Amino acid sequence: MTVTVAAVDLGATSGRVMLGRVGHDELTLHAVARFPNTPVRTIDGLHWNVLELYRSVVAGLTTAARDFALDSIGIDSWAVDYALVRNGRMLGVPYHYRDERTALGVERVHATVPADELYRETGLQHLPFNTLFQLAVEELDPRDRMLLVPDLLTYWLTGEQIAERTNASTTGLLDLGTREWNASLIARLGYPRELFPRLVDAGTAVGPLLPSVAAELGGTGAPVVTAIGSHDTASAVVAVPAVTDDSAYISCGTWGLVGVELEHPVVTDASRIANFTNEGGVDGRIRFLHNVMGLWLLTESVREWERAGDRIDLPALLQRAAAIPGDIPVFDANDPEFLPPGSMATRIRNHCASHGIALPDDPAYVARVIVESLAGAFADAVRKAAELSGRGVGVIHIVGGGSQNALLCQAVADRSGLPVHAGPVEATALGNLLVQARALGELRGDLTTLRALVAKTHSLSTYAPRIAAAR
Ligand code: ADP
Ligand code: LRH
Image 1: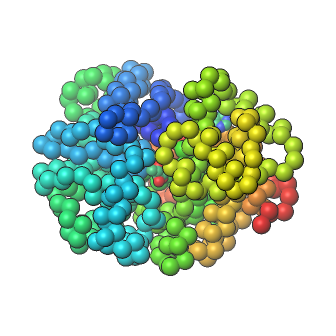
Image 2 (image 1 turned 30 degrees about the horizontal axis):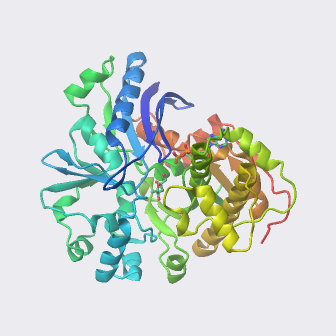
């Protein structure tokens, strides 16, 4: 027996609808739709075009449903961002986490609850865009509901308003111990308790499609919408093909999420100062990780070069970058000055210049500097994850779009002194559909079993360290 499921995976750079077939020994997927995720700046800031995303998702699901009887649909996306819904209607257009309005929110929240107390309560690293900071600049009303982006799409498909727990853990408003909404923190911050929907775990059937949506999709199936690890990183971690306990992961796309999976959170002064987070994973696991700036540095630089008239082919650019001989300088890829959009290559060149490094005005050279700097930051974060958690790390798994970047994967191996296994590229979609298949009863077992199926059905590229660890 097999099941046929659709995994909707919305990344900050692009989205896709993937069709998966899963059985005891089978795990295949193919893309039925890929579409860019292009934010829109208006007079009041930077927004996600959620209507366009929803349109693309429905179009993708319609294509899938035309050819296959779908058993289930699961939706994941980037974390922290949300829509406010009142009386069932979306109020305004959701903001992008890179919108600058969050600075005021941080000030307001910290005036009520200091950062170290927040960390003890929620275990979450400080990121200026965590949902609790965004909510601090909203005018909230007890009639409002906050729906995180995947939950918003789930609502539009089913009419059900829920909060899936892995993504809810990125709001900064879940209690670290109980993994329920932290009612006292919510009250201290003055947010209406009604704002926060019922929490559900990954693997819960949310409901059937609304009749109008089912009619739009057509086809012969009657899919249920299943809550999966709706935080994209949670789904990616499900599909890390780790077969040993000494594995660290890097979920590498727009961001590089670097860490280890734990049974229990680590909430120490050292982990707070190192800005390591304890996000909720599928099956109650802890994703103990650090956000590294990620390939955003490269895509946003490419955007600048293309605006200036260059045509950039990424694989060709990376090939030229790899051929540059000699010592390559590095910069602090984690500097918050790289968070906002715009003029990234120029910002990197200025940043380097202010640290006494003159970069030639050559996209291949800048790309190489970005890759080496990211690899250094990844290797540092792996070392730190091991040190803070006490978990020995002997191998690194890189999953996501960045696993196709051979220059980066090799540089991570070289700078960490550890072997790197790269792939699958579509780990997030795989984690999404594996949890659906288990919820449907097609697969049994814990995450180890799910990961073993990924390892068995996907070939990985391995990069051995060529030199001793740089530090
Ligand atoms: P997200 O889910 O955050 O949108 P992805 O996991 O899809 O991100 O990864 C996107 C990144 O993958 C791109 O920014 C790009 O740097 C990298 N990438 C995509 N295709 C290739 C390729 N052929 N070679 C190297 N890197 C690639
Ligand atoms: C990656 C990601 C990451 C979050 C960020 C907002 O797509 O979900 O885990 O920190 O986006």
